[in-house]
Amino acid sequence: MEILRVEGVNKSFGGLRALNNVNFSVEQGTVHAIIGPNGAGKSTFLNCMIGRLIPDTGTVKFGDISLTGMKPYEINQVGVSRVFQTPEIFAELTLLENVIIPTMAKRDGQFSLRPFKRLDRDAEIQDKALHMLEDVGLAEKKDVISGSLSRGDKRRLELAMCLSQDPKLLLLDEPTAGMSRADTNNTIDLLKRIAGRGITKVVIEHDMHVVFSLADKVTVLAQGTIIAEGKPEEIKGDPRVQEAYLGG
Ligand code: ADP
Ligand code: MG
Image (cartoon, rainbow, N blue to C red):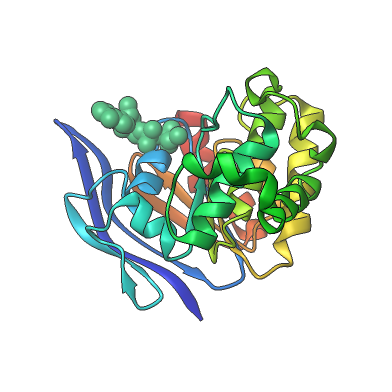
C-alpha cells in the first residue's frame, strides 16, 4: 500500500530549476532512500513534502490526505515527522526536556513551553520521554544541556524527538552528515533497529553507500530530475547513477 504520493512537483528559485516534474511514491512500511550529488534538489524536495517550501506546481498526498498547502505543523500533526540536515534542538534545555516538548505536543495537540512548570507531576510524559532517549542510546545524558552534545548525539536526540511523536512517516535529511565513521555506523544501526516498528522512512543521502544497507528502494535525483529508481542492487550498477555522481 502506498503511504505517500508526489505528482508533478516543480520548484524554481529565480532562474534555477531545483525540481523538475518530480513524481515519487513510497510504500508503507518500507525504507525509501533518495540519493543524489550535492545540489541535486534533495533538501528542496523534502521541504516541499513537509510544507517548508511550497512547490510551484504539483501535489503531495499522504494516504488520503492532501498535504499541498498545509502548514508544517499541520503536516506534523497528521503523522509526518522529519529530521533536518542541521539538527533543530533547544540548545539551552536538557536532553530530557527536549524530548518532553514534542511528547507533550503529541499528547495534548499543541506546542508549548509553559507545561514545564508542571513537569514533575507529569510522570507519564517523563517516562515516555526517557524511554525515547533509551531507544537512541542517550538515557545516561538525560540531564545534560543539549548544546554541549557532539554532532552525532544531537542528531540522535533529534531522532528521539521525532520518534516521541509516533510518526507514521519519518523523513530524514542526511542523518549521518558530518559524522565520524563510528557515529555513522551507530546511526545506521539505530535506523535499522527502529525499522521494524512499522514507521515508513524516507532517508535522503548524499553518500550513496550509507543507504544501501538500509533501503528497500532507492530513487536517484540529479539536477532536480529523477534519473533512476529501483532496488539498491539495481541502482548500484546503473551507469546513469555513476555518471551523475562523477559529473556532480
Ligand atoms: P541537495 O539537498 O540535493 O544538496 P538542495 O535542494 O539544497 O540540494 O539545492 C538544490 C539547488 O537549489 C541548489 O542549486 C541550491 O543552490 C538551490 N537552492 C536551494 N535552496 C535555495 C534557496 N532557498 N534559494 C535559492 N536557491 C536555492
Ligand atoms: Mg541537502
